[in-house]
Structures are given as C-alpha cells and as structure tokens.
Amino acid sequence: LHEDFYQVTNPQGFCLIININAYSAGSGEEERKGSERDVDRIDDFLNETKKSKELAKHGSFVCFLMAHGRKDPQGRDCIIDGHGVQSPVLELAAKFKASVCPDLAGKPKIFFVQACRGSGTDEVTHRGLAVDQLPPEFAQNPALYPPESDFLFCFPTTEGQVSYRDPQTGSVFVQTLCDYIEQFYTEKHLEDIMILVRRHMAEKPYEFRNERGEIIKYYCVAQTVSQLARQVSFDPSKAQKRSRSLQLFSLGSR
View 1 (tube, rainbow, N blue to C red):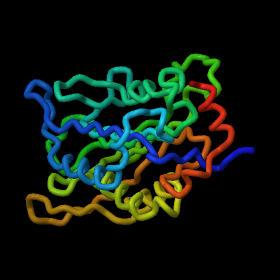
View 2 (cartoon, one colour):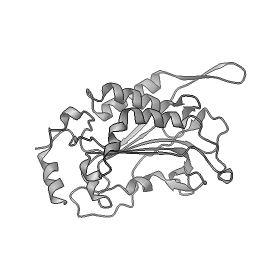
View 3 (tube, helix red, strand yellow):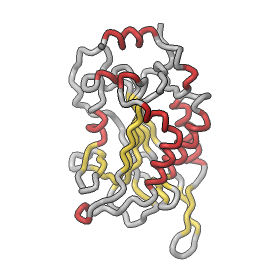
View 4 (spheres, one colour):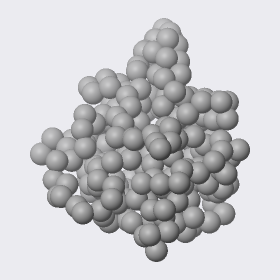
C-alpha cells in the first residue's frame, strides 16, 4: 500500500533559518537590507517548529537559505558567508541525506533558497540562484531510502533571471511563499502551493521607482526542483493518518 502523503507529525517539522545579512568589508558584498523582514515573516507561520530540536520527532526538515550567492569556478551555485567564503548549496543539502542523517530518512527535506549572484549595486534587484539537478557524486548506499530522494528545492527565479528584494519589505519570493503557505496549508499540499506561488510571481510584476521617477516593472518565475516521492502536507489534522511502511521504518532505525 502506497500512501500519497509523507507522514505528518505534531510538531510537523524542524525549520532551520539561515539569513546572512551583514558582510565584512573584505568580502566585497553589500549588506542585505530588508532580509530581516523575511526572517520575521517566516517566523510568523513556523513558530511551532521551535518547540523541539530532536529531528527524530519531526516528519519533515525545512531550511531557508538567504544570502548573497554566485557560481564557483566549477560552475556550482554557492551562498556566500559574511566573510566572503563560498559554500555550494547542494553540498550543504547533502549533509541531510539519509546516509548522513538517519533521523531524516524517508522524510521530506525542503530547501527554500533566496540568494543573489555577484555583487550588484542595486539593493532592490538581485540575480537569483537556480539549480538544475542534484550533485552526481552520491555513492551507492544500502539504506532503505536512496540518499538523493525526498528533497525539494525551491528558488525565487529560473536560471539566469533576476530576483528581487525590497530593503523595506523583504524579498518578493519569501514574502509571497509565506503568504500562500499560510493561506492554503490546510487545503493543498506543498507542490500545489508552489504552483500558486509561481503563478502569482509570473502574473504580478514587481514595481519600483527608479532615480528618474519612472515606474519600472519586472516579472520573474520561481523554480522548483523536486526529488519527492510523496506529497508534503503541513496540515496538523493529518497527524494521525500515518503510513504503515513509514512507521515500520522508524521503529527499525532505532
């Protein structure tokens, strides 16, 4: 019997928020003004995840990565820390695969990435971070779940396109994402919610006034790269409707 949804727990998931706002003078990067608004908005609807830090008790892992970013010499998408050190996004995500973090085996691992490429001088518009595939270096593993499974990556734009962050209100992607999850988490699963996010961002332009007083409009489309085997629900009412196969695996892994 195959269940359509990953097991829902209460608390529903563990959320890690990484927001790199300030940068040292030697990093060559500017302060990410407005990013604190994104942290506040995320915290508004995920505050329940702070009650427990034991991954084994949670049905999902959610990570927000928010920083400047660019490609390294190998062409990998990286985020940049406050001292200018680059870290490949997919190498960070690989630390949560089943063979490294057994408590997350068979559970959805969701990454929302809000990052820029390069050191653009416009604090409102930034290059977005996009990923086409998961890293190829995963070795064969005898675990029940393949190491690259159960991942979902969500980005503010497609490859090579611009993404937007307002120094007063935060990034368009994170704010829109939070609005739609908060509105529909009891009705729709996550990938359906992401369709609504993409539609909203594609149909509603981001507007700002330039130095000459002209209204400039930009469109962008969020990108989702999925390795999920089931649907993800954040509806707590589904917490008692568990998959028998997942229960057996959880017991056997202890």
